[in-house]
Image (cartoon, rainbow, N blue to C red):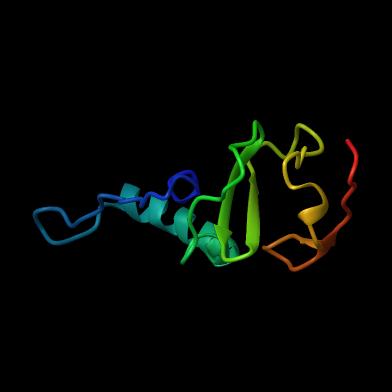
Length: 106
């Protein structure tokens, strides 16, 4: 998501070894990426950088008028969505579809 939030692309640089096999270490990394993408691909594919600045707590990606907030430090506490203001509609957790409570004032 860091790459997409800056209008970039991520290349994983995974290929077969001399015997035509993908190394086990690479398979483990690809499985982890796959698990994350199963839940979050909507916020990556066909998305790019948002017109909102980079927050301290993560990154934004955007597709049309849908803004995706990638919260990189969920154990820290609440996130400040300064800059979105009254433009924010409902907030949902992408991985489950659960609606999240939001507050307009920090």
